[in-house]
Length: 136
Image 1: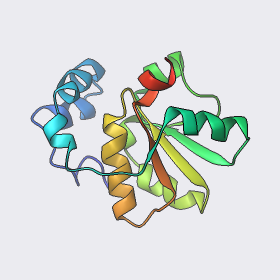
Image 2 (image 1 turned 45 degrees about the vertical axis):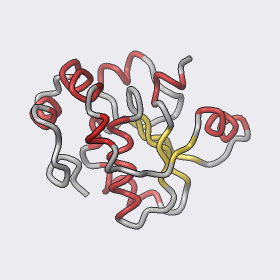
Image 3 (image 1 turned 90 degrees about the vertical axis):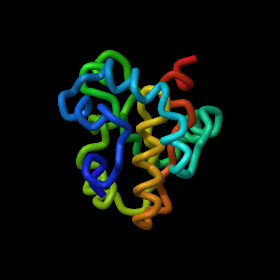
Image 4 (image 1 turned 30 degrees about the horizontal axis):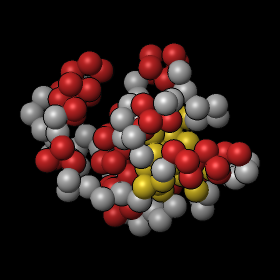
C-alpha cells in the first residue's frame, strides 16, 4: 500500500502531504466527508482504546500526524509515521499484534486503515476521532 500513489485524493491534498503543509491538509480534509465515505476501516472508540491501554494489552500505535505535531503531543509509546508514508511496510513487520492508527481527527487514519484492511491486515483499527477525541 502506498498512501500517496494508491489513493485518488481530493484536489490539493496529495501536494500538501508531499510538501508537509499540515494546515492545508487539515483544511482540505475537514471538508472531505464525501471523499471519506468510500473508506470503511475497522474502528475502535476512545473508550475501548483507553481500556486496552489500562489493561496493558499488547498494541502498537501508529500516529500519522506530522513530526512537529507528534513531538508536541502524542500517546506514550506510539510510533510516528507522518501521513502514513511507508506504513504498510511497518505494519507488515509487526506480526499479529493489534495495531491502532491515529491522526488529527481520524480522517487520514480512516484512509490508511481501510487500505491496510483491504490488504488483509485484520489486526488494524482506527481510533475514532483521532487525537482530537483522545485528548478531550
